[in-house]
Every structure is written in C-alpha cells, then in structure tokens.
Length: 138
Image (cartoon, rainbow, N blue to C red):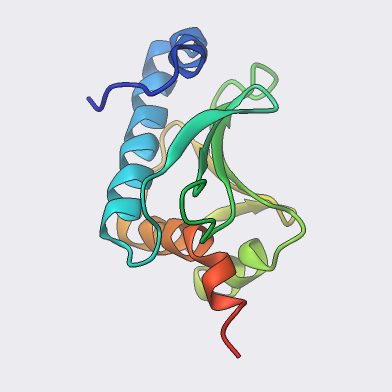
C-alpha cells in the first residue's frame, strides 16, 4: 500500500468499514497509478476537501480534483466525485452508460458488490486530472 501523504487523510480511511476501506484504497491506488502514467499531470497532492480524501494536481494545475468517499447513510455504496461545474460526469455518462452508475453531475457510485471496470475508470480519472489541459488548447 502506498504511504499516506497526510495523517488526516489516513485517519479518514481508518473510519471506513474494513470491506469499504479496501475498495476505497483500490480507488486511491488507481488514482495515483493513473496520474503517474498520464502525460502532464505531475505529482498529486493528497488532502481532504469537505472531509473527504481528495487528489489534486497542485504542482501542474493540469486537472480537476478527484475525491473518493463512503457515507454512513448509504452503507453499501461508495463513490468517486468530480467537480460538479465541469462536463466530466456528462462525458463519462455518454462514454460509459452501461459501465457505471452516476449521481447527478458529480459522482460515479459503486455498490460494495460491484466489479469495477478499472480501465474505464482509469480513463475517467485521467480525463479529470487533465481537464484544464484539454480546455486550454485552442
């Protein structure tokens, strides 16, 4: 497991139920692996936004923040969140209508029993982490 950059983020992961923590750690690893292999992203900053683990392209400012979290109110679900004022989730919904379940214009939601299509999800993460690069090309 990749070491946490921020002790507060590690504490949040410790609050998740063990079976959900494992799934969120897999999403976390996917985010870091995708960032490392996506041109222009650079090093990610791992922090908390709204009390949720967040992954920010602070060094390059190439992309939009990706967050992951679990809510007690929906104990069988966890999610990956994207900035709601972008076109990201609409794009993902168009490209992957059968692969994912979406929540409005802000999240891809997973059930604890879902088999995650990691290649498709990596595409979504890369698209988010390069969102500003793609929107500055003229």
